Image (cartoon, rainbow over all chains, first blue to last red; front, side):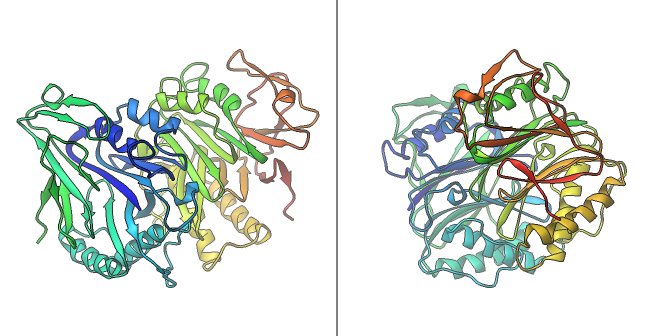
Length: 257
Length: 257
């Protein structure tokens, strides 16, 4: 299995604090040490860092922890290999272009025996079930909306339907974004927190580190952090229900119905 | 305009030395300071670093210079914007998936007024002529070989034909690879050097730095470095002729006829 970390905000925010705690799970406080990756959207652009090394030993992870990259949409992943070797092409997140946008996907779970044969637009490069599922999702969306990106209201039910089909195969927690829409799906385990005014101090579970967000934020800032398990021990995290597919915008869950 | 740097080797090699000199052109010895990027293939996997900052000020470029990533196929780019704003999505190299492989492309030149309208598989995310040309190349290859990746001998003439069409529009020097095939096209300016036994010392033009490759290599190693203009002042670089499309493999130019 693996672990997921996501962030969605109303102003570009750095993820250094959360990533510090998350990284520790890649070989220090937990054993998800078969590679890691992180994607930052900056406008339509997308910057990704991937490494087949563990996140606690990777010099690139050290840079990401130290160098504040400001983004409204971040998806990160630390890997404990179930399907697919420990190679760079099997590191999440995965990225493809659709409708002139980069789409990024990271998965926590396992889809035993999953082997879609009817992919025509998108082919997996690596050998993970996760990348295959990502290709199936994009292929489904592309076939349904061949010409241009649909509204969130149009896209959501199509994504929900293919997600349900895939989640029937196994465990399928994921994060999925194009730097505009941001989705989090819970199959077994995923939680989130929304930080907004009045901001307070937060203490990491995996590192003895405290950040007082009231010193770093403006009153109107709002940041949602999504993770496989809570990253802090002095805040209340909301657990998603199995089967729940949430859409985030501007740092909070939005209703798409 | 921009500058290109590529490397193709028979054993995974780091590009730290060449990248050091190349980076200096991004604001120190030259004015290509509107962003930079580099792609490293590791097997089928591809690791990319992009930044809209100049390569001389970017902390990520500092990491790439310092941290030896070993790869057989590298494509790098420093940008001086002609078309498209200075944003992350306009930084080269660009990447898309085709036939289950990542394809990477970087361009030096300018295609005035180029605006292809008939793209169906690949859409540009940014606003550069370069990314549009990349989409046209992939689209052409995909339509010609819809099912699977062709042999180099099959692919080359199709690539050459679409390259000629695009080069008629303006200046079109490029590097293009999927981590297996590696192409360099000269429209106006591109050169390369093949380093092989007996190895000697090389001195950068843009930084006062010497590396004695005889101390770092095995006799069977072979490395081709491709750049817009020579990076060293004590080696003989071969200039490509305008219109030449070279294929590299295992650190040397191969004949595809």
